[in-house]
Image (cartoon, rainbow, N blue to C red; front, side):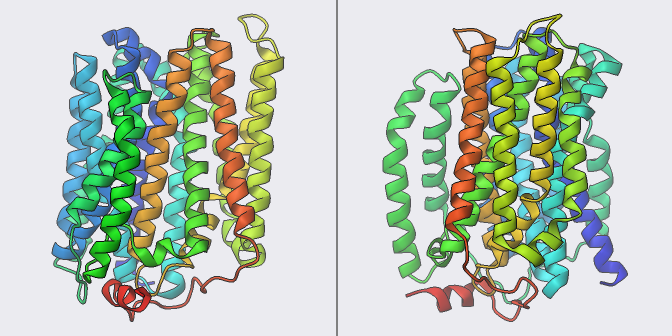
Length: 479
C-alpha cells in the first residue's frame, strides 16, 4: 500500500470513528440532558434511536449517489452535515430540537459511511481491501466501547450543563480536520465502469417498514397505526425488488445476496449482536445513574472493561478468521452469551441500592469485560466472513446492506430497551432486568445464526473481485 492509499485509509477511518462514536458517547448523556431541558421519555428515545434510524435509511441511497456522481463530494458533505447537526444539538434550548438535530446528524453519518466502503471497493485490491474492511469494522466496535467512558469523563469535568452539550460537540474537531483532508486526498469524479440507480420506491418501502417497527416503541401518538403498515410494506418491498430486478435494474436489496445463505446468516449475526451491545450499554448507564445515583464518570466506567477487552481482542481478529473461520466467531458469541448472562443474573439476584451495590457493580463489570473480549472476536471477523459470500464485484453494496441491517437493529433495540426502562411501571430494577434479558435474547439469536452458518466454505477474502462491476455481478447472479 503506497503513501497515497495509506492517507486515504487514514481519512476514511477517521470519518468512521467520528460518526460511529457519536451514538455510543451519548449513552451517559441522557439524564443530564433530561434534567437540563425537561425532555420527555419519548424525546429521549428519539435522541438515541433517531440517529440510528436516519443513519440506516441514508446508507443505500447515499451509496448509490456516490456510485453515480463520485464519492468525494458526498463524503465531505456528509461530514459537514454531521458536524452542523452536532452544533445545532449542542446549542438547542428545547429537547425536541436536540432530537431533530440528531436526525440530521444520522443522515450525515449515513451519507459518509457508504462512501468509505465504496472507496475501499474502488481503490484497494485483494488482501489490502480485506485489511481495510477489517480496520473499519474494528474502529466501529472500538468506538462503541470507548464512547461511554469518554462521555462520562466530559460530564465529570464540565458538569451536567454544559457537559451534555460538550459531549455532543466531542466529534467536532475530528469533523473539522476530516473535511479539508477529504477534499484534498480523495479522488474526484465518478468511479469508472459503475452503473447504478437509486431504486426510490424500494427506499420508501423500506423506510415505511422500519418506521412501523420503531414508532410504536418511542411513544409516538398513533404509532400503532404505523405498526399495521409494517407487514404490508415488507411484502410490497419483496415484490417490488423482484420486479425491479427482472427489469434489469439494480435493486435496493441485491437478490443475489439475499439468495446467499452465508451472507444472510452473517448479516443476521451482525444485526442482532450490534443492536444488543448498543442497547445494553445504554440501559446499564441509565440504571446506574438514575436508580443507583452514580455520577456520570462512575457509570461510564462500567463500559471501560468492555472497551479494554475489545481493543485487546481485536488484534487477534484476523488470526481467528484465518485459523478457525466461522467456528471461531461462534465460540466468541457463546462467550458473549455468558457475559450478558452474568449481567442478567447479577441484576436478578444481587442487591442494587445505594450503599449495597458494590457486588452488583463488580459483577456487571465482569460481564462487560467478557462481552468486550467477545466483541473484538466477533465484529471484524464476522464482517470478513460474511462478505466472502458476496458475488464478485458486489463488495461495496453487500457491505452497505450489512451496515444498514446493523443500524436498523440498533434503532429498534435502543427504542425497545429505553421504552422498557423509562416507561417501566414496575420500577427501574425490574425494567432493567427486562432490558438486559432482551439483549441476552438478541445475542442468543446471533449465536443461533452463527451455528446455522457452520461448515460452509466461502470465497477467499483476498481474491481480487475488482474485475467485475456490480452491474456485471447482477447479470451473473440473476436467474
